[in-house]
Length: 135
Image (cartoon, rainbow, N blue to C red; front, side):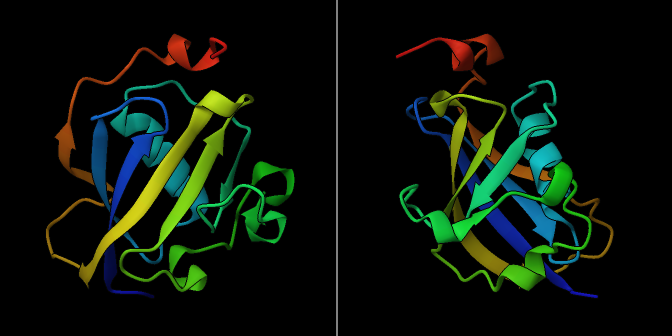
């Protein structure tokens, strides 16, 4: 069990100046991160999602698409994330549903904190329906 807390800055690729920082533990799964991101933006959940452990969507070897969209045992600590690492989260269908994630820091877990937790934010959350409009 990890006692690392990852502070992740999550921003929509198309919503300039809007971001959320989420503190999440290493023993949380990618499914937990998926839900935390959508909750932080007050968006409804979609069962289809994937992560790309690169900031380059052309790097097909970096994609993690959980089998049957059930990440089960894929823990954040298993990804060997490092500070300043940037990766991508895509939910649902469509290029506009892309979030850029930056590992801001890796800290010790704080007792009494309910993880995952939004620890900082900037800007109003855009309407989820805007994500489905074409560019």
